[in-house]
Amino acid sequence: MIYASVPLVEQTLSPHPPLISISGISQGLELLFGIQDFLYSSQKNDTELNTKLSQLPNLLLQACPFGTLLDANLQNSLDNINFASVSQPQKQPAWKAGTYKGKPQVSISITEKVKSMQYDKQDIADTWQVVGAVICKCDLEGIMPNVTISLNLPTNGSPLQDILVHPCVTSLDSAILTSSSIDAVNDSAFSGPYKFPFTPPLESFNLCYYTSQVPVPPILGFYQMKEEEIQLKIKVNLKLHESVKNNFEFCEAHIPFYNRGPITQLEYKVSFGQLEVFREKSLLIWIIGQKFPKSMEISLSGTITFGAKSHDKQPFDQICIGDTAYVKLHFSILDYTLTGCYADQHSVQVFASGKPKISSYRKLVSSDYYIWNSKAPAPVTYGSLLL
Image (cartoon, rainbow, N blue to C red; front, side, top):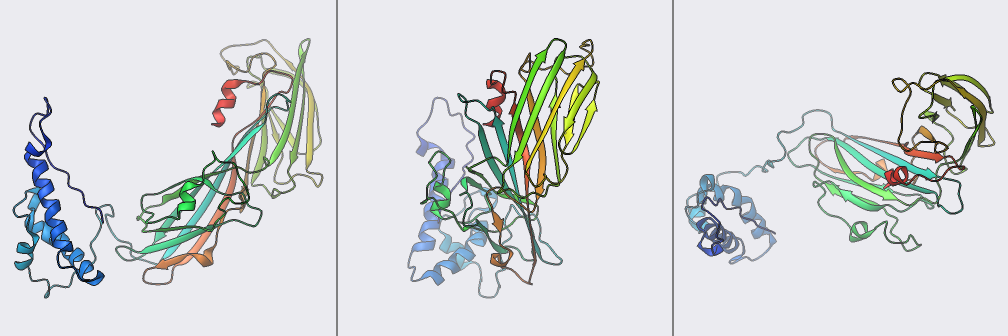
């Protein structure tokens, strides 16, 4: 048990006086020693300690009403209160403003965001990273229901790292806390199950965040753009990795052309999907759809002509000048995570009245997923967005 006292100090602290001379601090220490004496003097077993802990809140109201210390000897206050005739209800925590009434249910949502910077260059390594978030909503009756959720990985799943948990989590395995992305991933890395026991708040909350070093990005890309006289020639190749679920909620490739005039002419060839042209915005959107073809590879090539540049209408970018350009992927895959992480509904433990309905969802979405023109120098500024 850890006890803390927060004293009110209203006197001037400059120059710094001896701490023991400040009345609020000396009274706070006196109260802490009084609590310690009450709880641990003549203590025989855990049952007796738990009884004293249940009495402590009411004793503090008597010994220190409204924060004013009257008597640090809590045994004196105990003699003035008849606990035997009063059944002590479970104390409502200050951070929980109310209780839930209704059908019990637990909802778990895992969302992974994958970032990537791909250059197709021998001297610059491609980078990618997965960041996950587990969001929970627990509608459970009772003042302090307890829930334990386990996150699991398949045999070939990528271990979770840099795990940050919500303050309501009551305990964690040390292997979960020490798993860091700074360390090299090896066969001895902790791969779950990741158990999170907690007392949930009423509202939806982020149970934990994590990162993971997956072996490959979900979509590998190649982009080439070169200028020939008044035209631009572009070529884009995309390949879905064979391990990734080929069933998208949506998948698009945005190809912007900054610091140029509007698109006046476009000739293109696309092996799959549809191409939308936003001439005034100097933007192409390649709508790939919900599935890649059986080959898992698609391509787009074309020749673009631009009109006169108008600074009022055309998009401007300080980095994408000349041949420096990118393709940005936007996609989402439902019921899938790149790490393989999932919440097993059957392993969820709920210690509350009633049998709750348990539901779990998971999703992979793209975030800052760039494929840069291989003919141009790699931009440092955009690359730093990944970190």
